[in-house]
Length: 601
Image (tube, rainbow, N blue to C red; front, side, top):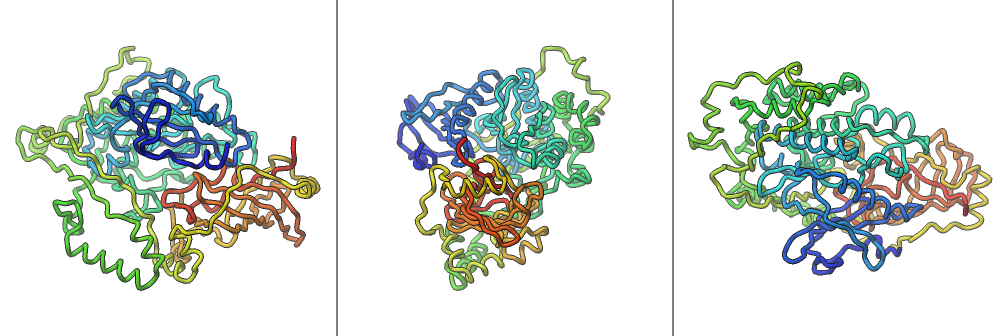
């Protein structure tokens, strides 16, 4: 497979089998998703993508086929359906999937401003979908606010992206202790397993179905407590995202974080997110029933929007959806000042379009509307406690579907208009812009104008490197933890990160590293490796592809001795790019790993 095949994107108008490609919708480490059309009907086309670093190209096919098998096993109205699969003339596989015209759950929560009742009923349906999936012995393993869509036409949720999914009896494809996923939504047991086994390449976490439900509980917690769920921790936020992964203590209750949350709902979320698995498991088993009971509540507190109405005195929106003229003048003035200060900063700001938001639905004035009536009526009876919800053994085989989640608009109005894209420019601190002015090379990287780089298509090692690593006791596949860029130290607080002119991720609790194409110097930080801690690895890095790829050719030990080596950046197919990245300026986590190639097998 050539580099062009690995990293090229299909252009609008091109054909993929019998389908015409309309637009690229998104992608990850293992595939890209396009909106396609055949006979006037839209479909989602998921095209497999081989990770540049992977030593086993055959796994690309196996992962796609495993996702296909997972989807064939399930049949549920709230899980995206597979319609077929095929191969390109070059041999790359692709899935033909149901196209969901809507928003991600994060976008829906942030822009539609739903009520507590709407949110709870939607999550009850997702819990039902997971219940069905687990009954078919399939696990999603990567549930997040980005992997749920909310359809525009009816407001119904749809689970998508089973690229990390697994079914019982499937061949093991994970080449790390944990399966692919988002750290925020991992269970405490998974986090503890990784901490204990991060240096054991053979360790594999036995992902239980309860972990999917825990992930759903974290999604619900974010839905109730985060006013900006569609903004990542690396973007400008009004308030930092609450840490839910602390090994020392549980996060504050949903009601503590957001006093608008009904007490009964807050108590259930707290049970579902308990740190102790044995205490959490019984409540997870009754999650769907509890959510359906909570969704039946009709009191004013349940029919109120989850988040308080925005402060219209801050930055009000005109009918066009843009800030008022006075605010626009301030934005333009800031942009002009940025031009004077640094050309690189201006280029970055110029590429960040103003984001238009859909109209925020208010409480209807019509007295016939149920939400308006609720505000005048007495509160409904309190939601049933945990003891009142039947256990799984008491629930009859026929599962009751809760009512449809209303679309996030006035029922008397037309269907909601399409939400605008929520693409945002990364948040950039003043220190970061100052650093751009002082470093011409970094400014050029931010402008997206790095020198032409040729990315390697495969690992090539010299005989001298093989011999050198043999003398060091480094076998093929040996791994070591590293500080990715030794020139960008690991910083432990947002204040230190800001002072250094770098970006802090509240989501990950880390000061992110910015990589450009060219030379790379990393430092080992793994005392269990045969390569001493504090050794330096020297090589090059490429950022134009789907992942950041690096190659090291020289190592310098703490005693000053230098050795020729053959090493790849990352333990799992290249560094994942974080949102806000672009060719020549990739945002990555500050610490990862490196893999040694000790010679032909």
